[in-house]
Picture 1 (cartoon, one colour):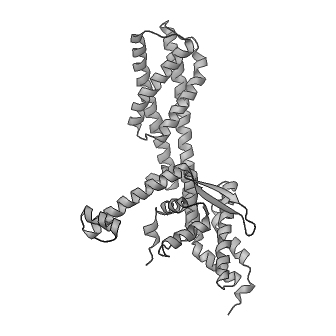
Picture 2 (picture 1 turned 180 degrees about the vertical axis):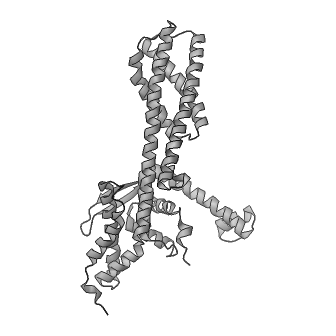
Amino acid sequence: MEYGPELLKGNIQTLILTVLEAGSLHGYGISKEIERRSEDALAFGEGTIYPALKALEREGFILGAWENPCTGPARKIYSLSEAGVREAVRRRDTWSRFARTIELVLGGRSSEQVTGFILNGSV
Amino acid sequence: MQDSSNRDPSAVCERFLDQVSVGLSKEVSVFERDDTIKEMRSHLLACAAAFEELGLTPYDAMAAAIDRFGDAATIQSQLLKEHRKGSHRHVSQIVTVGSGAIFGAILMVAADCSLVWTHTVGNRSLAMAPIGMVVGGLIGASLYKRPRTPLVAALRSGLIVPTSMMLLVCLLNRQFPDASFLAASLIAIGSASCLIAFVTCWIDRLVGKYLRQANHLPPTAMG
């Protein structure tokens, strides 16, 4: 199943921060990693990660450095700053709470049931 | 059927990148623009290489990479939007730090003058101005960070500014006035700095609102 760009709107920065938690990557690598982790379900133009990367870099959450590999063109490698590590945690928590709230509304379940669903995968 | 392998993939890539960069030239600096375009070129080349490994011709691989990359106009508008947010933030920083520095200098001189006038301490009126500028600038910077509401900014500055100003004046003159005079001065300068912080924050909001309207950005664009 693929999700449209509307659902992704505003969440690309969170995805980038989370992917970079695992290690430094360049723009192409970040988009491939998001694709891999989402099992190809997140459909978005790969170019849209660049405005998000610029915003995160300006905010000081990620640091970019150019690297010249032995073969191929130069690449800009991004890594998380200390503020970025904290921001990734904060955004993940916010997202978890938001997802839980939406699940409460959509499923008509109680708060405890949703927590069980999220933690164990079943109600 | 046209033989697509005869067409130059790098020309296609450059044409696409030109479409992205053409609208950026008016607002984004050459350095920033080149940096972004260089990065996107690297992305497209890597993606095209991956498609070539799957058996596509160089031209078709580049076309597929561009297709995955997305619409040039959309990427361009998103880049411009992010750039404007950053520019607004810089303007806001200049407004708050600058007005803080100016008002800080005025307050510092006023504090020293009031002490000279009452023959308590103080005799370095103009020498106090640069110190006031630094302190005011720092307060402006702290206001920029948070809080963003003029009222909270005013209340906070009403405590920080008078205390720091009076202590600085006294320390620089190596004399301390009596407690009742110090209390009266703190209240007077505190009230003034409350007003100044309120006005500074209010000006900052007005400038932000004007910039947002001018660039058709949503209310959250100032971050």
